[in-house]
Length: 209
Ligand SMILES: [Zn+2]
Image 1: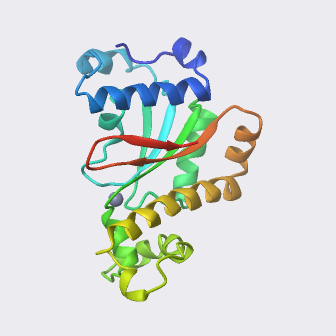
Image 2: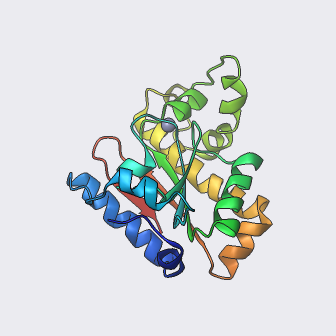
């Protein structure tokens, strides 16, 4: 598999980009890597990059976007922060990736058993982490069940994963609300913004469509 070029990027659509990622994740789940020479891709991409997708995911060491979607160099912009939430710097990165560098798809990728989400559920406090976890708290609040406070913590795995799913949903809402650039690109069909969840037990990505 070759690195994307200006020509191949131009043939990509939001829907086709989504299919590429789905196919890549199926290869990953079946331990079938596309045949690509990364060193050759270093050379092929030295004059420029033409990625087709932008993926916001967690820093979790098990959730590398390039690996779980079986992508090579020059294929995707990978934005990573613990808890895969959005702030103005991340929106700026996405605006660069889509408006200036031509990607057709934004994926907000959460994952099961997320440590950052668990920290937000438990109201963990530590240095700068406290302020970071506050960005995930709206998702904790937005998941209304269970109401019993003793069940609303990281020992309840269903609750944690429901908060992760809500966090993906709220992150997408913020992208649209706080980025006129990306909202307009989506409105005219230049990009698509989708949520997804990575299952750390199976390696499978489920897209919310
Ligand atoms: Zn995580």
